[in-house]
Structure formats: structure tokens, C-alpha cells
Image 1 (tube, rainbow, N blue to C red):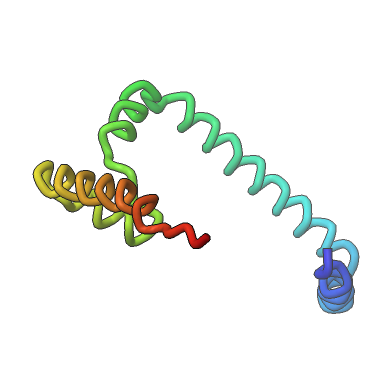
Image 2: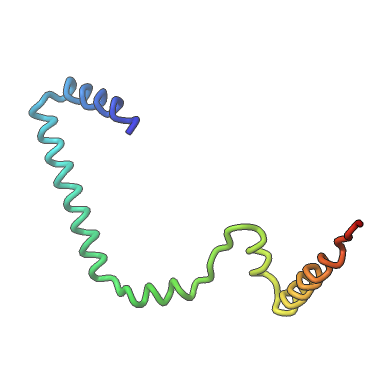
Length: 102
């Protein structure tokens, strides 16, 4: 929304350079061009085999969002199992480490 004054200035400059008739014609041609692009996109989307695209997308592995996910994806099953056991032992040891002073 902060770009409206800039847009008004650009339209004013274009109006001063090209005049109202040429600017009207240019706007009409731009609208026709946008309409043609939209129609071409709709036609292309109608022709695409969406089921095949969905299958391909499902077969592509997810991209990790953080370094921990990337490391987990690269681990072998044996390494994953060892990491899981290590985390379980850490969780089991934490309550034993807390001391009650009385």
C-alpha cells in the first residue's frame, strides 16, 4: 500500500509523455495481453495430467527446514537407531541427576 504515491507519479509522467489517447491505447493493449496470458495459463493447466504430477511430487523427498532435519535425513537406519537409544538414555538419566536437598 505504500507504493500508491509512486504509482500516481509514474502514471502522471506517462500521461505527460504519451498523452491521454496513447496512454488509453497502451492500457487497453496491456489488458488484452494480460487476458491472453491468463487464457494460455488456464489452457495449459487444463491439459496437464494432475494425477501424474501429484505422484511425482509425492515421490520427491521433503527438503529439510533446519540442520537437525538434514542430519536426520542423511543418517543410515543403524545410526538413527543409535541416536534414538542415546536420546532415550539421556531422558532416563535426567530425573536421576536431580538432587533433593533437605
